[in-house]
Image 1 (cartoon, rainbow, N blue to C red):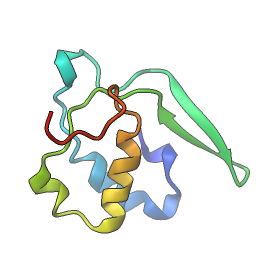
Image 2 (cartoon, rainbow, N blue to C red):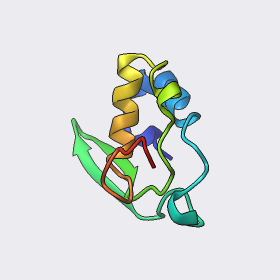
Image 3 (cartoon, one colour):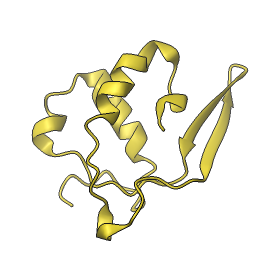
Image 4 (cartoon, helix red, strand yellow):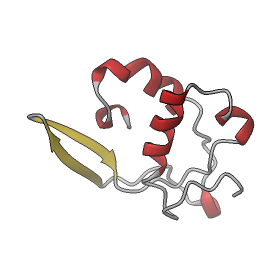
Length: 90
């Protein structure tokens, strides 16, 4: 779902990060991501993300164990959060 939003050379880190995103959603929304996507053109290719995601934030203990690059990937993904914030306290 998020792999299309990052360059191929980050594939392993993106897979690792996506695997850490909780399946639990805000306010018990029944889907983790919207079917709609947001798409940008970059260097002749497309960058595509779900328009919104409803998954709760990754716990601090997990976040603190990620590399800097993996944290940046996670923060990029959570820019699509339904509340517009990366709130680790929710």
